[in-house]
Length: 368
Length: 259
Ligand SMILES: Nc1ncnc2c1ncn2[C@@H]1O[C@H](COP(=O)(O)OP(=O)(O)OP(=O)(O)O)[C@@H](O)[C@H]1O
Ligand SMILES: [Mg+2]
Image (cartoon, rainbow over all chains, first blue to last red; front, side, top):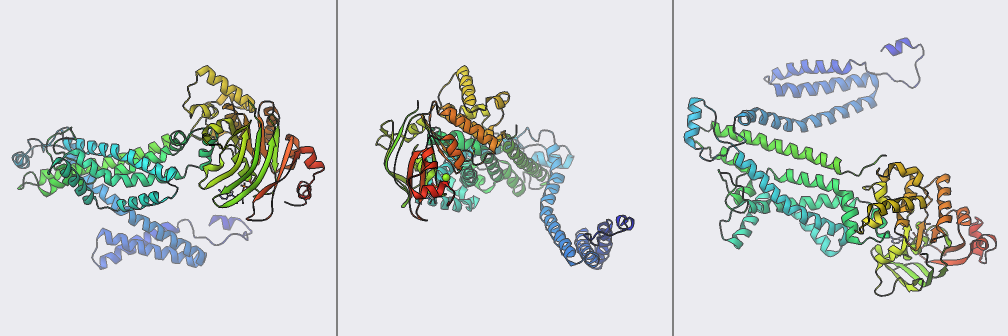
């Protein structure tokens, strides 16, 4: 500690502090001792990491306790615990992304993966490509299209219903019996298992259009059952934080209530509403079960949501894994499934990015 | 433009709570009237009944008559929204619309109501309203910037410009200067002097000097105790209220002996 040795008089306000290199020294000690301890129980990288973390925490905290006193030591212990919890929480996410990247890039990089469907691809082609080492035929175009169309229609259904419901709850409900009832059922709907939503939509359309009605639109209805409560909840919260003063300012100018809602309240809250909607889409885009029971699994390109079966990325992955196109050579199917999974994750990430951009774009402008 | 207000036996309720009781007052056109009184005596509550803003709150209601040039605001068949285009209001805290530019804030009364207005008329209205609110010179170069980027005092004058852009007959102001510095306060007081030529102005204030400076007549409200309704104690020319009030409570209040 150069500063202490050079200043003649020690300030009454300073305390002993760990030297700068302390943390790195503790890291080295942790890594070495951790390696030693983990070899005792049979070395593997995971065990090494765990032991290293424990040893590091113990050394660092004890050292700090000796030099800096117990308050600083407790502070360091808490920091270690918080950072550790963060790393543990991050681990599954990183490992999922890593696995999907590693397994999926090969499928995604295959020419034609994004532009062809599974139409005409059967076990024969897969066996050939497996035995000759030629490229894996077939792609996810039909599923990507299906996912986009089904989610688009689910959004078209859910956003107006959800937004109008939240407007009713915030602007007209005033906590009356109806609005409390709606809030209760929205809460219940939030917890509905997605397969139940799928069964509901399938049963609804079976009663109206006859049994076995499976189209993209039925799937969209099933997804909107899952989406509506999320949209209601997030928009409700956003509308509630619009200051009452703005409503009163508008009323005082002689503006009617519906115009006030349309032109003052919703524009003020739009950034939050839009990002809430985007996150709701991201939440349903990966649903598998409700789509299986409502849209079936198609292998052909279908652009019409109102007729015939439709594929989607999750159901594509599901069927490729469970029923490989060639039962004797599942590898090509596996490759396609991982590729589709990678595309799905990319979709979700794009949606999350879009949510942020949307929030920033619509946010009320401040500054001069 | 500029109408008189006559209030007869007005009781104001929040649900079952009688907040203001038995107010009778006659406010002349083209005058400035100040409401003073201790906190919680119902000045804001009463003021908000003059443009039917009171009933915006759930459970709030009113008994009695408020006549605007002889027409009862609370008569059957009266549209509260129409009332508010005649009686404008400026709030205690400046509240420009955050999603709108300065220009759009001034035009809010027109645009939010979906009325069509030609570009040149809009420009003229923006300039005359901002000039009327003594703000034109400060913002004329940045009319397209957001209104929330102005200082507090400028924002308050923007709100006044917004209120006069709909060309009301009466302007109500609830402590318009309580969040402002002395210089902005003076700017707004000067403005009130000018507004008097065309509008009936009613202002709530806690600042005695301000009431004395700007108003022609002053109304003193008081409250007997918590949970009791507020009442209009004395209403007279401002010089009289401050120099020789008839009621002891008024004298105590304006001389600073209570409240
Ligand atoms: N939204 C409301 N619901 C119920 N009671 C209210 C409401 N607003 C005000 N009151 C009550 O009405 C009475 C008068 O309040 P008001 O706001 O009119 O007082 P004020 O004279 O404007 O006070 P101040 O000078 O502090 O602004 C008070 O007793 C207050 O508690
Ligand atoms: Mg008040």
